[in-house]
Length: 314
Image (tube, rainbow, N blue to C red):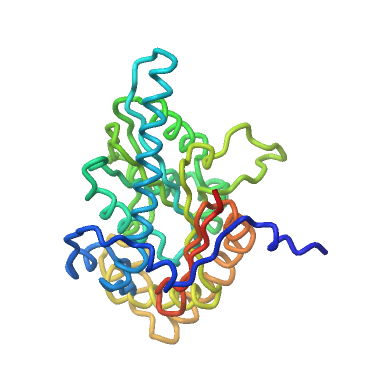
């Protein structure tokens, strides 16, 4: 069997090598800012921001600026009116790997540049089919798998923003009720940058035995995969479940309210079962195989700290 790992065109940076790339731009980021954006059971330090995410934001800034210049020059070349088209960043990775925090942190950092102050973040959770639809088709235990998303709706959204549509509406998902909110939308009004975060954004699998003409990732100008060892991700998922049991699950409107009284041992066993039967299967079958389609891979160690960065060669 051929070791395809040798064919992936990435340059690998250690944490120290990647940190040396930063040019120390002035960012007024505080511990409170980080507390507001970090996920459940995650701790991001200011040093982590400086050593990992500032160089990443600088790289993305360079790509976004080059994209904007090329877009303007191309339209001038063809004597076309220049529409405002956003630079689109896709962020993928497993449940509980910290991709949502990564997305929020990148959004915060990129918005500091005067060249692109308007940065919107969209999660693909809003493009999940409603629970009623999933229950009717016996897909509730497949939630998060490719078939549980309205991919056509997601692609239409991306097509609209890349076409310069002035205002595009995005469905909103509630992690408290574990369902799409039918009476709420997020409005996207021609921002400079759009970050699209979700476990499914790099997938290119067949549907109904056919290969689609268009994939979600076709609309990305840069893509990131947040990676970690599977055992670490599983432990983060279990710990997050235990924290939520004592917080969000206590609220009567929570979908998981019925699990608020689980003991530590019961919570561990229940969360591990969900991981093993659902999230692990989805990770191994649908998510991890997309890792090497990303332009950049952030690899995390046991304590959620990035220890290695792989960047696709230009």
